[in-house]
Each structure stands twice: as structure tokens, then as C-alpha cells.
Length: 490
Image (cartoon, rainbow, N blue to C red; front, side, top):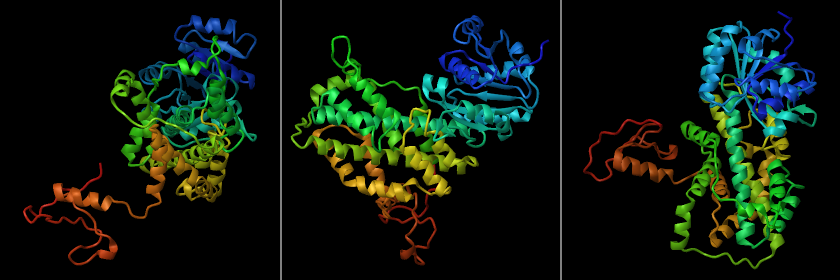
């Protein structure tokens, strides 16, 4: 048997897998490639990987035999059962201390489980978020590794070498324990849902509200991409709006308005509910996609239900400037909510999370990359235990400046009958978050009235009758009993 030559192995030769291999080869690493359909290995070696430092393997045993120790294997296969199946196939050919890396879109509880199970057998598991699409994988993705930290020194160089760079720094660092890497990727995807929904609402306001052509909206996005909204998603939206079909009309206007989803936005919203975090913008973005999906019903409703017809006659430049500020403020809220969820997950799951590194990982290479993330990185580097992004002076000032435009934009949309679930919920969250008193006092009274669910008294009104920090039940009608329900948080 010849001497092992591979620095890392990769299983799964779909486009992402192939591009990640070529990226690693470009950085001087020898990669051992394997695919369940082995003919794909030979085809890859004869074509895209020809002349590169890529070695083929026709079996799992051959893959492992060709890897230097500790063996490092990346799985880029479909999330779920396929990951567990390949881990089971790998283990007989690996030794304690070897490293298995899941680079797919796995649900973080699965990564928690795999990390624990493999640790009991002496193997090191890493669940890594990978973002950036095909191009990112080839020329520099955002990488979010978490899991068994003992693996990090053995994969750090290769991961940081192949990752995107932002101001010379790699968009990759250790995220945290167990499924933390996949958790952060999940939140990234949730924020991506929110960003995309906000952009779609801005497009709708300009198109239906103010009667802009696609070319004019493209011009607006071109301008926005030179300012605070400079980002990958603004850039690609500009390109989409400029793209004409063969007949000279914008292709985007011919696309069926039903949005697909693969589930990561939904996972984020469900996790926010589980952790009791008000991640409202991502939730609304998911629901907006589900509303779009009931197209036949919406078409029927459009013929029955009435509402205002937009008739904008104002200053177009002023409208565009207001919309830019509204989009910026809403994005700040979305990221603030995302980091609230990450913070709570750290507490709930006992993970030590690296907030400045997370923001930097998203700064380049990934779908939500933007100039704005540089400001988030700075905020968390300056104050690592920052309670909320909105408490940072930079973001606090930005929201203050944007507020009048933000409120006007939401009001315009409501008066025009244009749905803005993401813009609206961002503003509602902001107003709720800055309120030292919300009407939940009445809600608690209602719960106590009909279900004896009890309430707590405000400290300034505590007394012998209503002691502080005590579950209190009142017989509101004089007819009910004095037995209260047990209290718990779902």
C-alpha cells in the first residue's frame, strides 16, 4: 500500500463538493474524492480536476487509506439519514482521533447528537455551515464550523485558507460546541429569508405603489448598492431587474409568484418560538412565502376582496430615499433579532459562542454578505457581551436617523394596500422593544380571569394582599373559586 497523500477527503461530488475540492487544491492541499456513484469520481478526475492535486477513491476503505492522520473527511451529502449512513460506513476504516465533518445543511439537533455519539467512540465530529453557493464554494465560501473543539487545530488552516477573505481576515472561525456551527448557519439562512423578503417588499412598493419600470427599479438598486445597503443580495437584485428575455421584456415579470423554501427559515422561526425569542421578521418572511404558495386561492380572493388602488403622485426621489432608510432600519432589526436568538441558544444549550467571529464569517463569501456586517463585527469586538445590537451607538444612531422615513414607508404601504409584513413587523418590534410598559398586564388579567393562570404585581403596588414576586389569583367575579392553575412557560 502506498503512503497516504491526502490532507482531506470529501464525499459527495455534486457541484458544491466539486467546487470545494478545486478550491482546496488551488490552495496546495491534496484532496481525496469519493462519490457513491463511483463513475462520477473518474469523470471528475478526467475533466474538472485534471492536472489538480486531487486523488480519486472507489470505495470508503480506499478513501480512508489514502488520508494522512488524523484523517479528515468532509461529507457534502443530503441532510438527514444519508449523513448517518456515511458516518456508519466510515467508522470501521477510521481510528479514534480522526475527524468527520458534515458540511451539509443539517438540522442542529442532529449535529448535537452526532457530536456526542462520536465522542463516546473517540472520534471528533464537526458540523460546519457552508454558505456562498457554487461560486462561494469554488473561490471562497463563508465557513461556520462547530462541534468537538479538539478538531479545530487540525482543520483550522485548511478551513481558513479556502474561506472567503474580508479585509484580509478569513470568513471562518470556530463558532462553538456541538451543533453550534449548524445553528449559526440556520440563523444565517433565516436572516437571508428576511433580507430577501424586505427587498421584495421594496420592489413591490416601487413597482405597484409608485409605478416604476423594472429598469428604473434596477437603477434604484444600483444607487443603493453604493451606500449603506451595499450587499450581495442588492447587487443580484439589480442584475435580475436589468435582465431582459429574448423579446426585450424583463424576465422577472414572467416568473410565477410562488416562492419555494427548503426549510431552514422555518427551522429558525420554530427555534425562536421554542426559546421564547421574538424573531418576528424571519417568522413573517417564512409566512410570506407560504402565502405566496396559495396562488390559486389568492387569484380567487383578488376578484372578491376590495382595497385601495395605489395612485402615487409625490416626489419619486423622496420616496426612494425614504425606502432606502426603511430597508436599512428593518435590516438592523432583523440582525438584532438573529443575534438575540444566537445569544439565547448559547444560554439554553450551554454553548460558548463567538459573536464577533460570527459577524465576520457573514461579512464575505455568503449570501447575506454586506458592508453592514463590518459594523456588526466592530460592535461585538468593541463590546463582546453586548446585550443587543440596538444598544451599540452606531446602530442606535442609524435607527434614530431612519425612523421618520421608516414610519412613512410603512404608512404609505398600508394606505396603498401593499403588503409589507417584514417592514411592518420590524417597526412593531422596535416600538415594542423600546416600550417600558406593554399591554401584557391586561393579557395576564384575562388569563387569570378565565383560567386562574395567576399574575405578578408591579413592585410599586406590592402589599400584604398582593405580595411581590408571588403568583397571585383573584376571584374576578365573586363566583369562581380560589384555586389557581399551575404556572409554567411553554
